[in-house]
Length: 152
Image 1 (cartoon, helix red, strand yellow):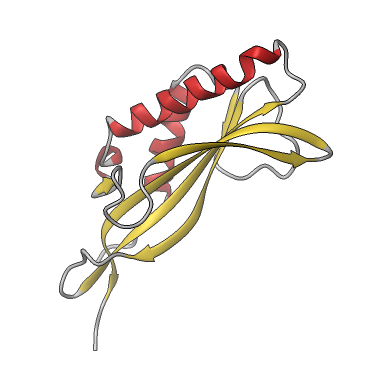
Image 2 (cartoon, rainbow, N blue to C red):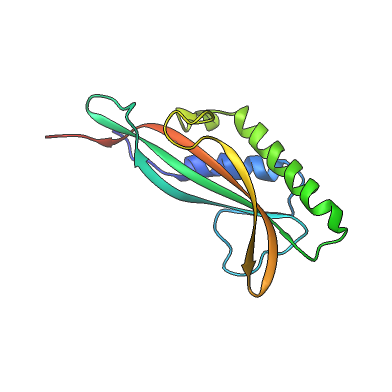
């Protein structure tokens, strides 16, 4: 079994976010300080676990990636915050849906929740550095074959 590098999964997800042309910044980590720009995004791994659709001597895994789009609640015009974020989230999900194996890095993005949660996005709010942000968090469950060897 070859050595697995999660960057093979993260890099195409980040690239799809950057290719939208709607986000000022897309980083590969949760921000340690308040995000900058009208719309910015961050991508990170939220969890990993084995899936039941594994081989006889290896385990396939699910990597749940989170991508969060941020907009300051003081952005103007106020009426554009939600539509701009929703459009970015929908387009990012559509791009991922069109690249289900992430350029060959994965078996598939688990769009329809075969193994737990499916591909989707949820709006909400977070406070960081004393500032309130409107956020859209994408949940991107990625299935990767034969990552862990099994032996008795």
